[in-house]
Length: 111
Image 1 (tube, rainbow, N blue to C red):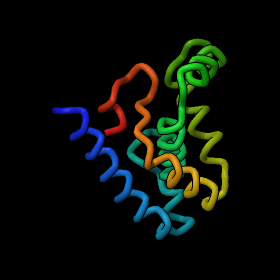
Image 2: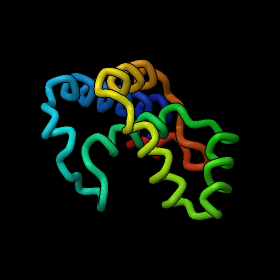
Image 3: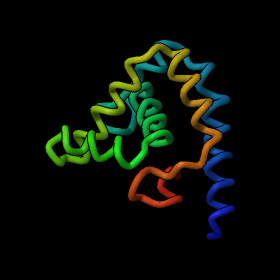
Image 4: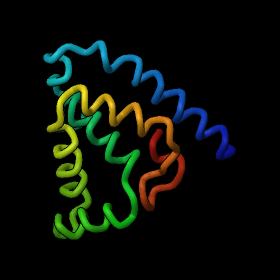
C-alpha cells in the first residue's frame, strides 16, 4: 500500500477516535480495555505517547525500563494517562494531525 494511503487511513482513524473521546463518561474512561491491565484512559495515553515519541525519548525510556519494551511502553502510557481528561484530549487532538510513526516500527505501526 502506498505511504500516502497509509497516512490517510491513520488520519481518518484518529479523527474518528477524536470525535468519540470527548463523549466518554468517567466510567467509560476507566473501563478495562482489550489490552491486559490497561483502561481506555491508558490506551489513549499510549496513543498520545506513540504519536509524539522521538527516538531519543523512546531509547531513554527503554533503558530506564531495563531494556524491557513492554515495561517501557506501560510506564510511558501510564504517565500520559495520569493527566486530566482535558489534557489527554488536547494532547491527542494536537498530535493526531501529525504523521509520526513510532520509532523503529515504520509508517503502518499506528494502524
